[in-house]
Image (tube, rainbow, N blue to C red; front, side, top):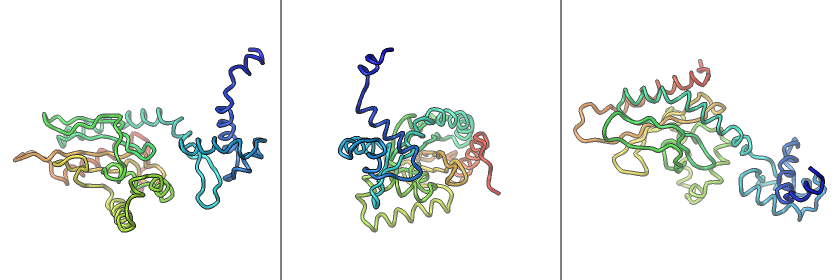
Length: 261
């Protein structure tokens, strides 16, 4: 292709954004607007809108104290999203089906996607009436058992960053934020979440993390139990939690995660 044709199909705004991302990727530390401008041989005004756009879409982040910019993990997440989901589904679907058969309840597998909980796998209940959680649905991270479980087992920095960006969390009072943080600490110590559904009455959610430490927590496994009337075969809460832990171990084994001593 001739140089004239190359110039014809150039997208200056896109190239400017990619140049910023590539520049930040090569820097050992966060960079200020003026430092980025100097590095790209641009004026600070030329890159101001592009920095704001990249920040709003989550590709870069600005430190609240120094106002310097650095890359987020969004590009890494996008590049690994498909393979991550397929790997999780491959490792989890059969153990999930076995768990659903044992406890006669549906279960679903979720991951964090930005500030939401994304359902990536679902195993239906053999019972004629049960809760249906469709794959691909997004749910609130603050009010769901899955969201609280994932938040509880994140490292402090990642959790704080996510909560700072969550508009629902920012609307909470100081006392409410303190209570929420205490709840997360309790869940982490307990090793699972058990709570009434925030979406519908008559449903209790149970959730466990998939992984052993904050560095390998990739997902959570959740059972949404529909409370039924006069059912002698209804599994107890302890039965469900035990089944979840058994399923959790099988999934982690399939993922190659080594158990802690």
